Image 1 (cartoon, rainbow, N blue to C red):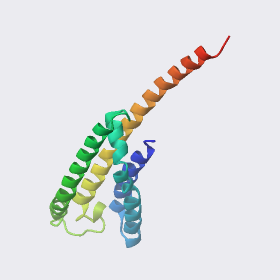
Image 2 (cartoon, helix red, strand yellow):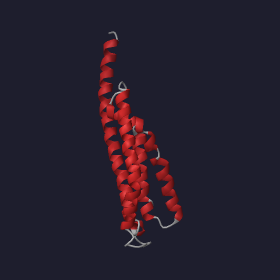
Image 3 (cartoon, rainbow, N blue to C red):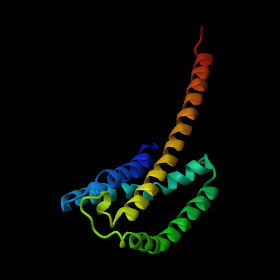
Length: 154
């Protein structure tokens, strides 16, 4: 169930670092946009699942709504701040100028590193959730086996 979370963060990071950084033609930038936009959009719709994972229980809908509201509040702040941050980071590369032979065409390197790093950092969080789910799944399967053994007559 957490695979969409991992894909919605890891594929955009790979697209930014692996395609955008080496882009010399518009078609490669178009592929980056398609991969980044197509996969990172799923991150937003997973908000309710994030809230459920944080609470750890479906039996507390009130707490789930509070966590979901906090996630949306932080998202709103990030949306407002991202314009200012993006402008500041893009301005950092202006002194380098446009250099086709360099990674990120020189000028866009700070923006590329910022976007790719944040997307990649989000995937690290997804890996933590996947690890937690794997361990809780292992415990659940051994409990299920014990319950089945008690129900089977000998």
